[in-house]
Length: 187
Image (cartoon, rainbow, N blue to C red):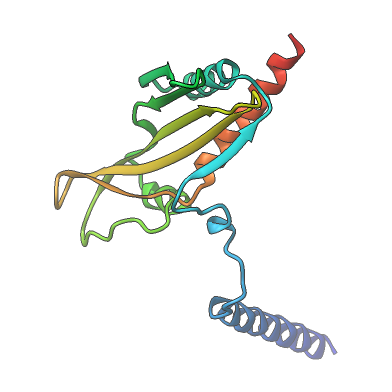
């Protein structure tokens, strides 16, 4: 009796594992499956219009970069002939992954496609945020964000390589900017 029950349980376990493997393989080739890693990808950058003044959005971009522990590489703004402001805020390269056994996994999580270097050893992964701001006539501010990933490979090429971001890091900093703007609204 015990052997029958054990054999039935064993059979159920094996069949369930075979079934789960089959559905995983079917999902790999499903053209309609949405990849969570790529759901924010936009090769042209990310544009938003805020109902806040140019100065508030400009300062929120600066504060969001500083909160990440990054330096501001370049910031400037000027007034156009129409009296509206235009500006930019560029971060320095913000390191989000350093040398470890799992650095490739981290790079793949935030990348469209990591450069393939046979036998390569990645030392770091980093991103540079580029914010472009434009004041509109109605007092709103248009923000365009472009993020670029890069990393240093030391063993084969000993160079820094650049590639596209999938948008996850950009969405995280844009969410932080939204929080900063909301918090400064209370003041």
